[in-house]
Length: 251
DNA sequence: ACCTATGTTGATAC
DNA sequence: GGTATCAACATAGG
Image (cartoon, rainbow, N blue to C red; front, side, top):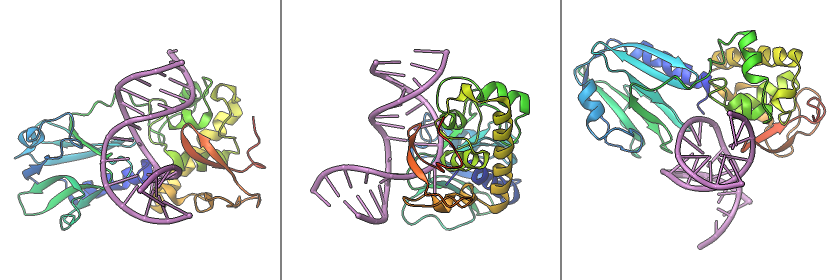
């Protein structure tokens, strides 16, 4: 689930429901999700602190506190944020803050690819997919020999685009996912950025990254909702990829 | 039973 | 340096 739009919605949930609340206890006992911290380390830093601001860059969130330490959160592949809900009966609440008022905020994540950590390092992320300017996008994305889809999903190049959004963006821009990034024309790069911004905005409005037009057709035998051709599929950048063989001509 | 699939990211190998 | 592959995890389905 979580690509940039899902993370932005989680950030807004935190902003609306958790800011201003004081932490009475922290469950950081899952040493995999809270790595590299030892159990109790995050608790020691945050207990007694009040949440003040919630931020996001790409798929990474961080929450500032009135005591200095910053809590970084990543939703991984199946994670989500829950505020003031009953603890998960299956044990999927991998990290949680208990508030002084009796409420609770949890990172719920079946697969445990999510992360909770103090003072996350954001320096290796590229510019946010919803904010990047035209020149910077051309320079960062339009280079190298790897398939454009792999380059779009590289969080160090552009932060926030995942598998579903990448397929949607490339389909909107009518660019084949295997096109070597460095072979794209300036016109194609500009079109790609335009499509990316439209998909980011639209997905946030619709509430999740899978809100795009081709997502419902990403099944074997699915058809292009624009021209009706049967979609092609395969693996690009290690991920399952769907594209329209008519609208997105092979490089 | 055993194989595949699944929205992410990091380490490692070529 | 850049690119591809695999492993981390948990579940569902053929």
